[in-house]
Amino acid sequence: MIYAKCIRESQIAKSVSEFQKRQNEENHVYCIGQTTVSKNGCDILYCVPLNFIYDCLKYGRYIAIIDVDDDSLEYPYKSSYMGLQRYTSEQLVINIMDSQDEQTIDYIFNEVGDADLVHDGYVHTLPDNIQKYFRKKQENC
Image (cartoon, rainbow, N blue to C red):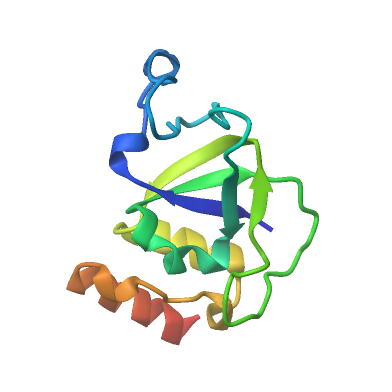
């Protein structure tokens, strides 16, 4: 199972050197291939199963794919991600994607495998053309 989290554009570092320079910022910074670490050991980094990621768009437009040790092969069928979050002090970022991109939607539906499991939480906040694309994927998978 793949885990992910929503982040804001301002939290994305485009290079390793930028990532390293920005470690003292108030908010956590994420960079592909780098490990984001809890700021003071007290705050906790969370992520959710990929099928719930559109329920989390209120936290940011971009989706960070997080490396989590989880051998579960099936995505959970629940009405909410509550109780399914993973809490860690470190997160290795595998990829960062734009939630408003058709390729991201394709990736999510392909990885989850069952359109009925992909939640549409905050899809209504996306541009109309992306909402339509998402709905079409829901119907055709």
